[in-house]
Image (cartoon, rainbow, N blue to C red; front, side, top):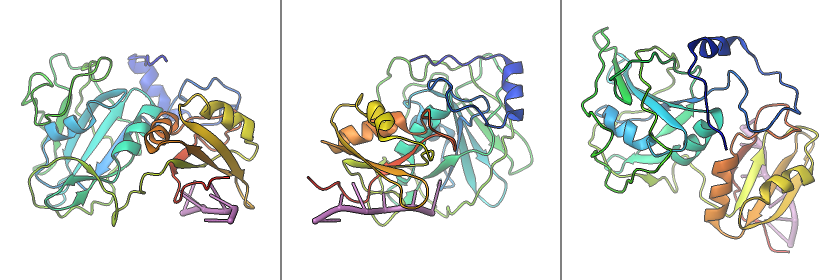
Length: 287
DNA sequence: AGCACA
């Protein structure tokens, strides 16, 4: 598993001009050039801190940097989180989307892919997160914390290979302001997956897999899925249009793990981007 | 956005 991403600025700048029409037989492990590796986060309470955003994402695989942006529209706050690759961004999105960010007010995070990647200029000595404050039309950087340790997140342990590429920072406008929904005046809290009455689907040991190419075969998918512990059975349905698949696992945790790893993955039959994986609405019935 | 099998 190689996550080297070139830090060559020229490479980065060129990415935008590439649409994605890669031949479907390309190597699976490399993200397409130009793929979005930045997440857009809304639904934040307006008193959210950049540190909280950082703590939210720092443990995610492939995390690079994040920024909090006061949009200047009212008290609206949004955030961006950048990862080393598209698939890591998707995995993090998947894990955190719909999460109850503030139990006091019940505000749920809404996470989507950003419209464009964050560009980052290398700034030696700058922290792993940044604040962009458009409230007074002025831009300020903040690194209230020198290290990324000792924050308000007790259940976190520094894992090797996660947030240790703090070379990132930037003062950018990656433009992707979306609908805010956030009218939550409150303090911060602990994370809790929104289980019901919210936006997220409840966890299930069967996965629903969509955005498959028209020629996707059961074998192809089966081969991929069988690398994940607990995988049982795959079923493909074509239902008129594009095929979708259901993959059953022994345990919810195993399904979750496979989903998080495979989210956004390209198959050799993919022609419309990577797989989109969710928990199925109901468990596959025993046969 | 697209969720079947009983």
